Image (cartoon, rainbow, N blue to C red; front, top):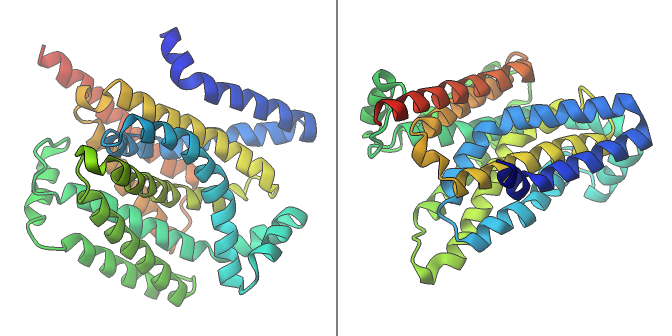
Length: 332
């Protein structure tokens, strides 16, 4: 157990301690408390993401698995949680990214207000992308293991209808755009971008084989797919983090620490072949993703607290975990 912690979690623990100490020294106990809360929320909200990532990561070569943890964490912290929101705000506000970057540092309150103004677009993008992830999984006609059998068996039958998940996603997006208080055009554009991006990335991912001649190419494509998936999970959390603090460095530190733990846990599950031993864990994670996508899309109409979203995901994964343990014991 000690060796496992050292091998997979020593890095995140050290980074967390250094980050906590630096925040406490520079900004005091109140800032430290916010960073800890943000780290916990990131882990809770992204636990199902780790399970799904492990399924994809298992298809990658060891070198790309390491890059997922090294290069990938830089993309997750500085790309998804810092640069991408700045780019989204700059496009929405028709301002240069340099100006928005300066605003984020010099006047984080104003930056937070601008980011809040594009919440609808961010929510639509992430919600539709994650809805497609879950529906594509449940409508897979080749799916033979079912966690909630009575429901999932019907999903598989419905999956025989070509592109049903795309039709559902478009219908949901158009319907919500009419009743949402957010700008209808931005919701539709962002939602269709999320849909199109999923179709492209899923097509690339599905076409990749693990033949030696394609490992490098496949590793890069899957690496990009995982980071897009991480963005869909995390963008709404970035916006919600401004409810706790307007300090961008505190937000990035807290979310970054949580993201590092999640990615380390993903690599741990791949190395230990957790999904092979816990047969319902993947299903539970996709139920959690479906719940997260519904909560995100519901935010286009009513406010759903992040803590509720996190608890729904944690509940789905936890129930699937214990059901998997029970199944494993009964098969002994």
